[in-house]
Length: 285
Picture 1 (cartoon, rainbow, N blue to C red):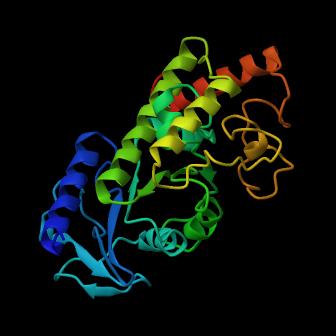
Picture 2 (cartoon, rainbow, N blue to C red):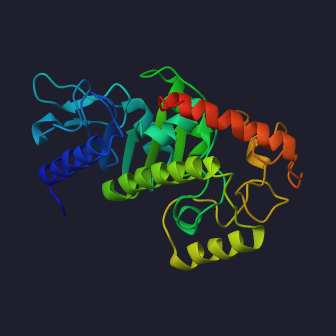
């Protein structure tokens, strides 16, 4: 069993990775690791994640209350968000929050990552919905996040960033990398005229691979939240006005109802608006 000091060193290492990969700026982002049902290690508030050392790391209980913190350090103000994930997902061992440029741009533009464009994303990541905006450090974020937790392993946070979770620290961080890579590919393929998506048959083949691997997490490969479809990728249910379980998941690339064909003019206008918004957030003209 890895001791706490080694885990603190691992947290610092992941902090340097997200900082060096431009997934956070200044003091942004936070990381946590579950030790047991009532003990969690987390990054402190107000420090750069790229320059932490083990003595920076705090320990909290399941309510986010301090168990141990060195003088001058206190837990991240976003710890409530992490605790809600652990509460609702007992299979989770670590949570990572960051502001990767492309993924956050999609979150700011209000566009979920739901298009099936590459095998790795469909198999390992699944759809990435957008949790409705909440004021940082308040209960609004965990409350808005909660309804997505039973079904997904990553979300975009509206006008905020991205959140990923998994069985351990490295796996949670790798999901953050996957979210950002997926977002970048989706953005750049739109600039080239739009991505070529997998059809339903090929998506189901990829889901079968995931089931065969027995991969951990709650990627909805065995079920679709829309009972009339075989898969959840781009079926439209998660984004439709009539979809009750995710009332805030309101953005759809394929129409208001499942099975609707894309209207070419409307689609072209949508892609143009998406590109304009994302480029503006990236400081491009």
